[in-house]
Image (tube, rainbow, N blue to C red; front, side, top):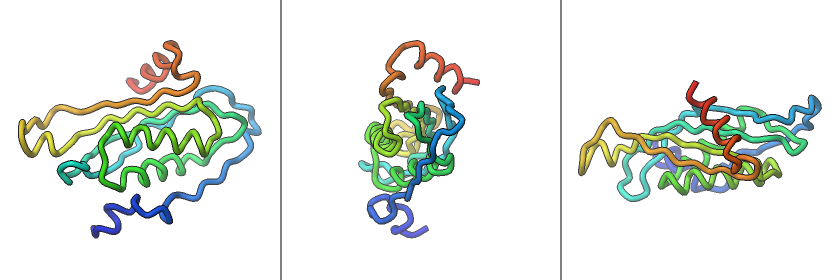
Length: 150
């Protein structure tokens, strides 16, 4: 792997091209894509962050191809990161692309800076989340968390 691949998210030319499609089936419930594997690098220590991103949104009349959700996660992860910023970047990208506030992003990741240096804890994980629009309501958060725990 070379530096241009590992940090390809720093180049705006690599941002995924995304086309939206009419929601012709009028699906107006939560769509979830879970367990999107990503690899990033800690912006403080430049060691790997390995995790899973879970995304949910409710269509505002348009839908996105499922693989594009993965590509957005990969693009944002491919730069020196802190997990909180990565979570927010993915959410902001999705809100802009999908033209909706109804977006949720949860990231569960292992930071090799924690497991390989300092405390050397190889079992802990960090979870961050972003809830926008209807996902800020406690029943939607609970529904999403229950689904992710299945």
